[in-house]
Structures are given as structure tokens and as C-alpha cells.
Amino acid sequence: MLFKIAWRNIWRNRTRSLVVIAAVAVGLFAGMFMMAFFQGAINQEVESMVETQLSHIQFHNPAFIDDKEVNDTIANAKVIVNRLKQNRDVKAVSGRLITTGMVSSSSTASGVEIHGVVPEDERSVSNISQDVIAGSYFTGLKKNEIVIGEKLAGKLGVKLHNKIVLTFQSKTGDLTAGSFRIAGIFRSRNSSFDQMTVFTRFDDLAAILGTTGEMHEIAVVLKDGQKTNSVARGLKKEYPSLLVQTWTELSPQMALLSGIMDQMMYIIIGIILLALMFGIINTMLMAVLERQREFGVLMAIGMNKARVFMMIVLESVMLTCAGIPAGILFTSLTVGSLAKHGIDLSSFSQALSQYGFSNIIYPVLKQSMFVPVSVMTALTAVLSAVYPAIKALRFKPAEAIHKI
Amino acid sequence: MGNIIESYHLSKTYNPDTVPVHAVNEVDLVVEEGEFTALVGPSGSGKTTLLNLIGGLDYPTGGQVKIDSVDITKMNESKLIDFRLENIGFVFQAYNLIPVLTASENVEFVMLLQKAPKKEREKRAVELLTEVGLKDKLNKRPSELSGGQQQRVAVARALASKPRFILADEPTANLDSVSTENLLEIMAKLNKEDKMTFIFSTHDQRVIDKARRVVTLVDGKIVSDTKK
Image (tube, rainbow over all chains, first blue to last red; front, side, top):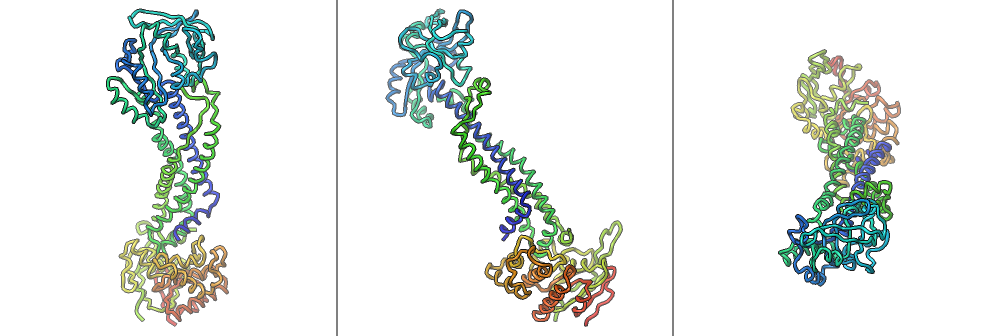
């Protein structure tokens, strides 16, 4: 009967109760939507990083990571690439030559990282080929073709088919240069990457560097990205002399960002609930003070303090929890729709691309967040009831009965 | 018949440190089982305060109240609540039913506090409401009942816990003459047939006429005690 009384009491002041229920629903929606938005943005960023730059696993000569010296190549790289292609967990493998240098046009110069790639392999490992907005991802018809980012092209003042010169250190330590014709211009989500990275054919770069079949980096994409850690563990054992790193090891800041999203969500929801708590306390306090005489009567006829306390807590929990399904439903419907169509933030594209974020964010709502969020909300309701309940317990029946 | 209520040198003084008001002043009162007693007196004479002290709703500043020889003034608040639940029925001037419960649920509620089984609660609630003439109003909420009907539900609620006695604070003050007559008949019948002890405060001459004992209070003191 306590449940019955508590539930009916909530609806004694329908408008006030509906306002609290709506506040809880909107608060939960705000918190969960915000988290779904950030989760979506981070997921897209991670996906983009993996697909554009990092892949799931990379191999390097351990010395290469520090200074990116031309001579710090992977021994027997071709054999390793072939063996990796046989691995049943591996979807695609691409070997790369990487060096740093200067790119010059007739008007200016810029520092870049030069990637020598085998286009046929690289297409399966990186989606840069899909980001080409002018020309093509290597025609294969001519020697010394180069694919550069739109931002770099703008900086150099060059267009498709223009010639640019790459200057870098060869294997022998001499300064060397090569003239390349722009075969394609790409635009990825990350404008910094676009400005700092150029792609040439593996053989063209090897010829100028003076390397013969050596590689600086082997990028591996797995059939199932979830298995990255377990596959990497196996490969580390198999190639103990090489540095085998997962994308989380290559970009710990991105892994951290992705990893702390859950904690962030609970903190944000917690702050929203804390603000809501004051509203619930206010409502419950009003309800208790309005019913002073009723509480006096209840205590007079024998309702003990534990039951009075429980009744107020029940009212608070029912009132608050009525907003949970509404909040979850509203969030699910909104995020469900936006997950399909995305949130277009084109007007902020420049700022977003600097941080590698897409113009269109597809929010991701984790179903697993519903239970903890509901528990947090219910806990808020219980805590909100404590002060009003203590207030009610302090009523003196003889005085409270005569309150108007 | 044994003594059910005994008060000795019972006093209640408000504002003892500033402007003392002696609401009840050294009252000695003994009520036997089965009595039908009216506390009368002008407003401010201490009727309600005396009922509150006897009913364990308030603590005296002096003296003792014994219910069946148990000194309730020494009990803490929690024990008093339990004691009231098992021993005392209350009827208030303003009915004071729980507005969100039906008549039947209001009566059952006290038995629920006593942890009585559901079937027993339902059965007794119907019996009691039938006894006070509200068999056809079981599922009506207080707002759907007249003042007289609400007060009869309050009497049924007071009886529900099978108390040792019922305290009624001006039970007819808000009722019209027909409802007053009706309520008095019910109370008198319960007193006569079930030997239920009633103590009520009142200004109403019709109620005073029905009482078999009239205790008159003035300025917190008993000035007359008449048995008919």
C-alpha cells in the first residue's frame, strides 16, 4: 500500500510532477545525446586515423621510430610482407618507404613526410586513394608521380600535373632531389595530415633514396579490428627484433580519448543529475511541507519513522524514475535518426578538419549506458529525498495535526 | 471495570522560560474501561492538550500518564508510535483521512501498519464501514464523501486497530446536526455493545448530553467531574 500511496501522491499536483519528470527526461537526453555525439566523433576519428594513417598494426625497425633515419630499415621486409599476407587474420599488407624532406614549387617550399607506397597494396590498407579529389591515385603511366594534399597544393601554389621537387637525404647521406609531377590531389578529414604528407610510388622513391627492396614501415590491416591486440601479441613473439605496434600504441592520445569516453559520460551525466537533484529536493520539500498535517496524522495513528522515510523516498524515486524511460526513448529516437543521417557541421569544417574530425558526425548511442544511467538517476532520487524526509520526521504529531 | 487511563499531576507548560502558559495544570484523571467521557470547557481550557498528552502525541512538562498501568511519558518517540498503533484510536476534528486512499483503504491502512494479512484487513474494513453505515462507500475517496461520512470513516479507522480506547478531539465540530446525531449514535452503540472506551473533547451540548461522564476544564485545571 506504501507504493500505492506514494504513486497516487505524485499525481496530487500533476503539473509540478510533470515538470520534474520532464526535467529528468530532458536532462538525461542532454547528457546521453552529448555523449553519443562525442562517441560518434571519436569513433569516426579513430576509424579515420586507422584507415588513413595508422592501420591496425605497424612494423618498424626499433631505431627508425626515434629519428626516422633512412638506413633504419626492416631487414627481410619483402619476406615478412609475404608471410603476413598468408596470415589468416590479416586482410591487407603494405610496405612503405618513409623519409622526411622538403617539397618545393616555383614559389615556395614546405617540410613534408614522403611516403613511398605500392599503390595496389596501399589501396587495401589506406583510404587515401578514395580521398583523391583531383586527378588520380597514380596513373601508373609515367615515372615520378606524386599525390599531395589539397592544403599543401594551396600552400605551394600548384595544381594538378604541375611539377614539384622533393629534396631529402639519400641512403648514402648525400642530399638528393627528384622532380615529381602531381598525379592527384587528396583531401582527408585531417588537414594537418594533408599538409604534411605526400605519396610517391615505392620504386620511384627507392631509386632516389638508393634503397633496394628495403622498407621502413609495414602496415597491416586485419579482417577483424577487435582482434588487434591478440594478433599483435602473436606477431611480437614471431618478430622479436622488430617493433610491432598496434594503433593504440602508435597513437596513445587517440586511444586515451577513446578509452575515457565512458568515464566522461558518467561525469557529465553526474553533473546533470546533481543539478536536477536540487529541483527534485525542492519539489519533494514542497510536497512534504504542504502535507504536514497528513504526516502528523500518519504518525499519530502509528506510522513509524522508517515507514514515513520510506514513503517519501518512494515518492521521490517514482517521480524521478518516471522520467527515465521518457529520456531514454527520446534519446534513442533522436540518436537513432541522426545516426543514419548524421549531424552536418559543414559550417565548422575548417576548425573540425584541423583536429581530424569529419564535417558530418554520426552519433553513437551505447545501449550498455542505459542501465548505469538509470541506476545513477534512481540514486539521485533517493539522495534527493533524504532532506525532505528528515524534515518530515521532525514534525511533532500534536503540532502537525493542527497545521492548515 | 479496571482503570484504563490514569494521569497524576499532569502538566503541560508552553514557553516555560519566557511567558509560561499552563495549558494543563496538575490534572489528576482516572478513566475506567467502558466509559463515555466528555471533556468540556471554553476555548483554551486545555481540552486538546490533555487529549494529546493522554494519547501520547505530546510529552508533558510534569506528571505522569499511565495507560493500563504503563507510564507512557517515559517512552521515546518510536516506542510511543508503536504504543499508539496498538492501543489508541484517534478521531480528529478535521477528519484527517488520507486523501489518496479510498474509505476502505483508509481503514485498512492502520491494520497494514500492524502487519495484518491482506484478507483479514479487507474483511475487517468492510465490517467496520458497514457498522458505521458506509457499506456502499467502500471505494469512495474522502473528496467524494460528505463531512459526516468522512468522520464515520475516521471512526472506523480508529476502531480498525482494535484499540483499548478512542480519543476524539471535537469530532462533531465540523458536522451538521444530522451527521452529528448519526455519529453520536454510532459512538454510543460502540460504547454500549462493544464496551469501547471513548474520551472526547467537545463544545457541543448534544454530545455533552450523550456523555455519561462530563469533565470540565478551565485554565488547564479540572473544575468539575460529573458522572450521570
